[in-house]
Length: 200
Image (cartoon, rainbow, N blue to C red):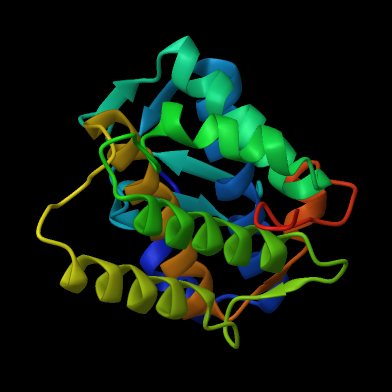
């Protein structure tokens, strides 16, 4: 099969790097919302890129998992709400995804809502997302670790959500490696400013 491993993208032209990144983001969104079946392995040796045809080819379907309709719909509500400033809808979708649950202490729930707000606010900006310069993931990871260190209990989303989050984290790390600049708001379909769940 013709093509280069995704891992070799650093050798490609910047426009090809951007094309691959946008194609992988678009594919992940289609998997989540349209196909409702997702290849969840964040190891991009499973892909090839055909620079001549501008195609991304998936080689391994071994860790493909179904996404149930409830989870898919909850992600759609959560994402749309975050990008358009519908804070009540964003917070109401979070428990279905397992980002929040009733067993959490109230103070911890508040802190996780703040984390969700910070992430969504960054992604909703009216500018391209600079993967190479943005420290969003590191900052959110540190906040999450600080919360975990103060808690005697571990509160994890269900496995179905964790698999999807692993795929999204892999995309983020690939973007950082390539240092690409992507109009995420355009790709995600958002068109409005993000408001905080904490306001009011």
